[in-house]
Image (cartoon, helix red, strand yellow):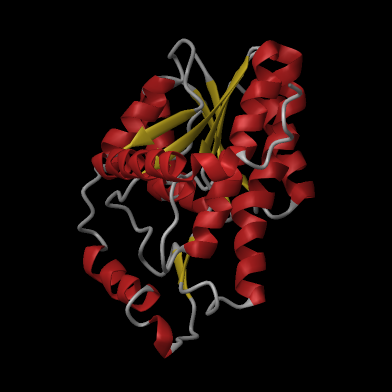
Length: 278
């Protein structure tokens, strides 16, 4: 039996992971800004602790973890799921929008992770699942600032995986493509109110596409939750777990592009080294 700590657990992937973990008989600490939404959905259960947590509040993160340990004695799986998107060209995004996004998607993830890690280190075991995105592997017009937060999550995940592996703690970036959740709704996606006509064919076109594909995405969120709950029992888990055919296609396309870059620019790249002594 595992004890989970899930952020952003009131809806979307977070709520589905809580549902699957509870059905499995695991213990779950489900956190959200409004924990009542969690108890309204799942009821009062002996193996569920619904807890208030704004991940941007580091003091509250430590308090939430303290309450989790007091209730269940340990945390085996941390799911850093809390986050949201920002749609708009990089120039269109205001500094306030950028800073708010980083506070949740990056600094919030760091705050919760740092609060949990002392307990996992003491246990010499644990799994940390950081929700990234296909946008954490490759960026694109209209989602540049959002993707930059997920690039940060990928970098943190790689470093944490290396730092924590000798301590029996595994860290993985979960990379969903487009799944049929409310991610593209106003509840999870902030849209920059500034529009610059010069970006109409790039970021502007993505704004329109986002409206069209919302709730028509190819990914099944219920299946993703099933995979994630089963994944914590995998031996030697990878540092990245791409989920969705569109994520695999994006990874393959970037690999091809990078291979071409290396081939075309190899001579220039190696020319910057010092000359080897004769």
